[in-house]
Length: 315
Ligand code: FAD
Ligand code: NDP
Image (cartoon, rainbow, N blue to C red; front, side):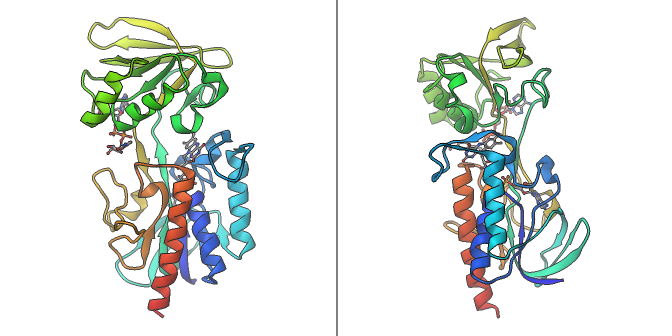
């Protein structure tokens, strides 16, 4: 089938784009994915509990509930939604041809909003059904303010800008924040490194790894190993945050679009336009810095408006 606008993804970026595009009568068709990138339709927020920083919800809202509302609003204005993953797309000529799980088609313009997947470590005790989301998270900005973490020792794994930023952020809430890094040198930029070194509440465990997460119903301690001496010990912590990077969901594009060295789609400054006219990218798939629902939604809005302008100029 031939469409004017194809939207790939189902997080805040995709649905905001769909709401704007549907109201502009572009009759968008949205492929929300079926466990694409290991995430259920609805995106990363389906993997969390309370979302407390999205404006308009003063009491907070559960992540899955919020994404149900996004989806309902897309449908209300006429977006056609398919619970299928787009596995292939040919961006070499317009209309762009694509293949999803059970159907194929073409589109005059495309918004890619396939998000990113936070990397997790498969440490004993930290997996689904164990202590994941029970004191263990991959997003300090999202979960750090939870009451369970107030005035408690916390730990962050990683040595990049995210890890340092998250550790600094968590010092607002925790008593001590252990930054557990596998090497004796941080990867973070110099200014961020200095920020961590100057913060009296951050204690860096150089050349350490976490080997186990411990606790009955909620995280109580992590076992850490000093890679230089092989010594292991338990550190009591109420929170453990992975900050070891994200993987953008771009593999299905098979190198047809400009990406950076970490496979994030490159968009033009102040725009969601990619290097291919008619193809736009919104949300975490093109944003490795802010990574928030509100910023993803904002760029989804931009993508829809830019797609509308593009389609108006191309018949
Ligand atoms: P995503 O939410 O990443 O969704 C993309 C969707 O596209 C996924 O469902 C994926 O399966 C689908 N997809 C991927 N590939 C394909 C394909 N080929 N075809 C079809 N579909 C595909 N932010 C906040 O602002 N507040 C919070 O409290 C908060 N809490 C968080 C808690 C956790 C545990 C995590 C991991 C993140 C949290 N975030 C929070 C960050 C927020 O979830 C993300 O910034 C936001 O969801 C990004 O939205 P997105 O639209 O770019 O894509
Ligand atoms: P990075 O890839 O830069 O860093 C990931 C960190 O996690 C590294 O220190 C890495 O260790 C560590 N790590 C990776 N895998 C493992 C593992 N299996 N076990 C233990 N540690 C592991 O990711 P970031 O998310 O920090 O940053 C991504 C990009 O976003 C960067 O370009 C960054 O500059 C940018 N960014 C910028 C910010 C800002 O400017 N304020 C804020 C946040 C991100 P090692 O160093 O040994 O490889």
